Length: 108
Image 1 (cartoon, rainbow, N blue to C red):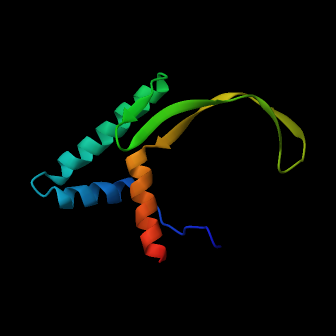
Image 2 (cartoon, rainbow, N blue to C red; image 1 turned 180 degrees about the vertical axis):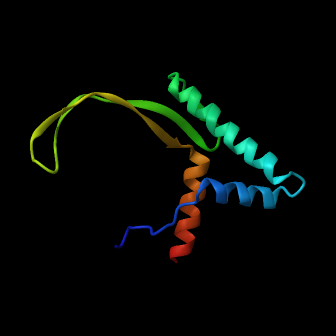
């Protein structure tokens, strides 16, 4: 496990709670609405093929996975899987550096 990072997931409700605590001049419901609206707008943009770029954070885009042959795990039969678009996140330089610096410091 030398290069593996053990982490937990932050749920949307935890993110909203944390943001509401840090922005105590905003009501919890307002923060909740802002987060949900942001995620909905981002989802809609990706669903219409748009790319989303947030400077210093990263960009969201779609990658196409071509059709391929798969296998049914229960029967072992070969199955044809159709091509599909999948969301892709590419972290920005500032985010990469911040994450790397933080995790590197915690390992020392």
